[in-house]
Each structure stands twice: as structure tokens, then as C-alpha cells.
Image (cartoon, rainbow, N blue to C red; front, side, top):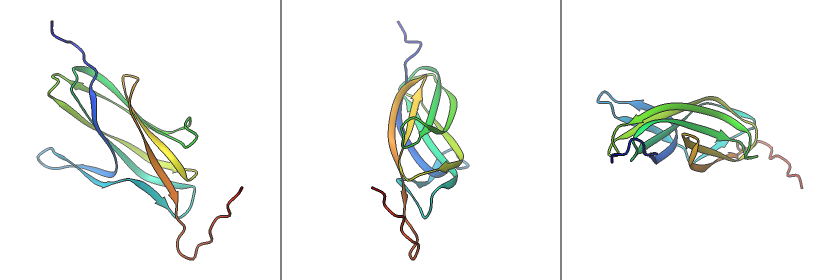
Length: 142
């Protein structure tokens, strides 16, 4: 009996500033992001790219990628794409682009990657307020 559908594995998910395609079809990622440092809040990021690569599956799938606020419930941005894997040895790469993302507060945001409503990965994205030299520091409450 041959499998007609196998849920794929998420091989990687990376946050970057830009993803471009070379003439030969290969993708290259520019500015892989570990942390977002900003001089003031709120701030709007013009473009955030999430590169996801799927493998080891068979069938047609729906990917859903979300950016979740530090309260862990508010969806700041989201994107969907469909892809197909015809053989477990194949892979599918996709880029979700979040445009004009408004970060209201500093803190730990989360990227969630789902396939057919099954969570495959959830990882942090820290937004840090780093004032410019000479800029007044915000008062700490507490």
C-alpha cells in the first residue's frame, strides 16, 4: 500500500529582511534576523520575510505563518500559502512577507508556523528598545 498523504516536516524557518531569487532559481536570504533593535516605540517595520522549507511529505498542504504579540494571543500579522510535495524526497520552499508590521511595545513576540492547522514550530522574536546615545531613557515603572 502506497501512502497518498504524509504531513511534511518543517526543515527550517528563518526571519530575514529580504529573499531574492537568482537566475538559476536558487533563493538567497539577506539579513537573517535574530533580534529587532529599535530606538523608539511604537515602530513600523516596512517588510519582514519568513522563509520556510518543507520536506518529507506527500500531498497538497496549506501553510499558515503568524506573528504573535507578547501577550501571546494577539495576531500582529499572518500569511498563508499552498504547496505540494509529490514525493518524500522533494522539498518546497516558500516566503511569507509581512508588510508594514507595527510593533507597539518591546518584548518577546513569537513566530508560529502551521501546516493544515497543525503547529510545527513556535519560536521567539525579541523586539528591544535601544535608545540612541543622548536620548532620554524611559522611566521604569514598578
